[in-house]
Length: 373
Ligand code: NAD
Image (cartoon, rainbow, N blue to C red; front, side, top):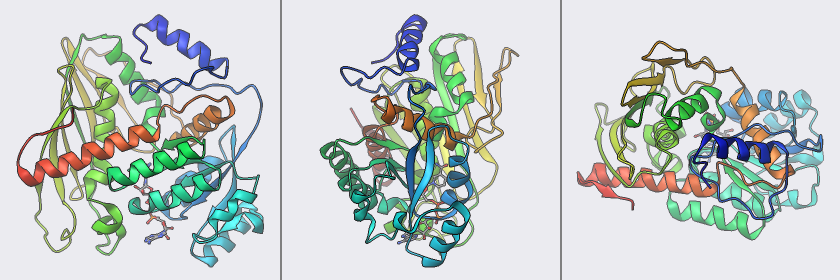
């Protein structure tokens, strides 16, 4: 269901804000704007984090402390020393501390409502399916997985368990991105024609899983190129129908398994095309721009955890509030569960993006345009 006018959008917002359970589940539109909602019940859902690496430690756990409707209720880790540290730091009870083999026992733990998967990409299906079988809702980090078949298994497992599956697309909840979407949708500068987007960084440790194909499923495209795909999809309001791509490798030793850089094109049915680049080679590459009939607007930087800056070629501000993106994303998912509302970032969206990325790898390999519709 895609709002076709501002009035429709406001009506949808009002429905969501009222926290009304939906008699018929909405099919989440790709162009849906995540709206902060207030739950009727002041209930906090228990979140268990799976994988206590950098993102869980530095972003998600601190963000959980800032949420309105979530609390850190459990952990899953293969490292006993980390379990001890987290137990002491966050007061997690022994009964809510699991390892990857015991996490199915969560089925007997009513303190855990949502399992947040923060392991390397190729372990997301394994952990999601275990969580779903234990009867938990799942929030899974991006990219959803390393193949469409595994993504489908995740969707099926959550459906079978009658639980929601959301993908950690934090920018969908980031107010500058939402404002950019509004400018595009309300055609303030006319129809958007072209999108240009890039995200990359210079990767360090050559032994990390991000450079291991079996665990990462690909290089910078899977890791950060996905942000440009999401940004283009948000602005275009659709999924791409055809893609082309070219990869570059200057260090074949470090990048023996995965691409070092990729430039790629996404074509949309409404005539918009997006020209994107991603890399593990340089820092400071971080922007998204929309070119419309009467001007351009964009975000530079676009994809950081904070400090996102908007601009418009007509000199008007493209401003928005600064939020903790992870707290906002988790509160939105908690609200969806509490209010029986479908998430705007469902597994089906994650699957479609993995399909797009697999098509991009095929395009780069064959030198041909790959059609998706
Ligand atoms: P990380 O390497 O810091 O942490 C990964 C965790 O998984 C570690 O605790 C590690 O011990 C655990 N793990 C379990 N089995 C493992 C195995 N077989 N090999 C390696 N590690 C194993 O990675 P991270 O940066 O926290 O990323 C985790 C996930 O989060 C990835 O899917 C990544 O794409 C995603 N991520 C998302 C964002 C975002 O902004 N949304 C940012 C960073 C990472």
